[in-house]
Length: 320
Image (spheres, rainbow, N blue to C red):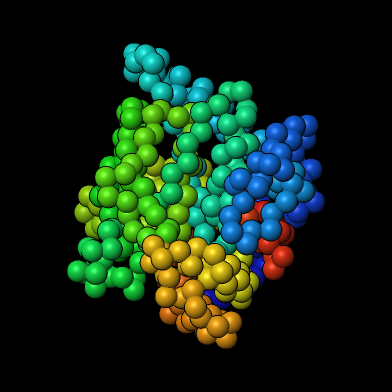
């Protein structure tokens, strides 16, 4: 294979790179609608995000998405005129992907709050793909418990049916719920999604694709239903450190609950906790990152690249 070189790769990249400062300037006059109290509510465990980061990174992003959503709403209206349909409301779907411990959940919740405060699309729902994991009893039966979070551990048919119903404008679409305490799907518990203006779908593998079929009859991918996708990115070593820090916080918190699936880790010493977290990271999360998650990064419309301090250092926006 001919090596075209790094300079050529940068020149032909489908992304435009923005420094932190360049991206912040794109906020323009977008008002700050998130408060410190909001941030406390949406911030995930060990996430260090502050209002300055919201102003610098997420306000410009919410402005961009607002413009995209407004354009999409006009397109839906034109399509309805052409099809002679009335009152069809199809949500604008945003996918948020990235590694375990990278801060996807916080980013998704911040975007939900910011986007819901734009007047043209006040109804914004957030669904995580954790609920679409196969129940533990199924994973155990199939020998997949050690592969939980890998593509094969999800109920793909249910995800695709959910996304198809959402993009068909169906009402009262059900999404399954998940408990991080019991580490399992909540049987019989669902979240109702009723024609929001925007739906955010957050999960590590939402940009995953299958092998293209030779006959052109393959099933769709989850991301085929997205209007816009975001990948939260960071160096492997930083992700490992953040995962270990989160493990310590859980050991001192949620793991102490006798109902916790990981209650056995609550009594670990610091040395044992580091060893256990490192083993889990290296044998499961790092493998999933390299094999399944990281290869989907080029498929995103926007990549937020974080530094060791959790702050976004660069933004990559796909060229139109």
